[in-house]
Length: 222
Image (cartoon, rainbow, N blue to C red; front, side):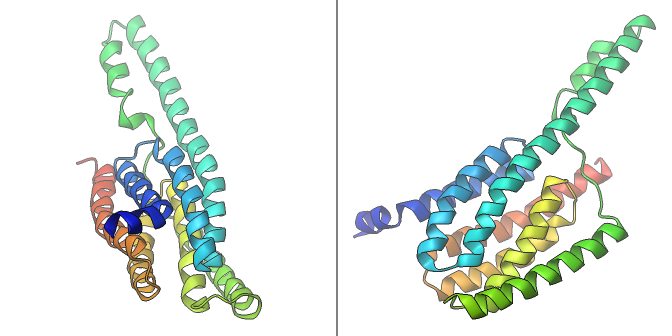
């Protein structure tokens, strides 16, 4: 019975596993989260299409695009950091300083794009983007699709779009948005009988709290 259920729901299960790996890498600020995110999105495009969560399916397509952009932005941040490290290392050699120690310190997680706090202007713009997306999606889903929960589908999708962009730019406050998204999503997927995905989003919720704390340490340097 269990084996048959796993076979019938194998795409959803694989997507859930990939999603958990994705969030673990996100918490650790590991750049490999982006290719894993591409794989996760591919699985969930199929899951949400068959479940008639059309906005969420479209969101996965957006995730594919942002994963590519985020991968580039994080790598660009790393390249810039390494270039500065080499310049400092060369200067250290000329001055007889310990350039090897400086380079070793710059070769780890600090190579990545650094975590920042959201600016007021950015927050205002993103709020406007969220509202515009929400009402547009609500209108489309209500009038043109058979989505069973157009209000919540639109809310989850719009907030996720904003949160994913913030993640790609490594803005700390994106974790607060994920906490809301994951809580609401878990309840919606429970009501629709998508139990593996519901469990995934409960795990996401817990991991979002962990990520919030972990990224805060990156801000304080403690």
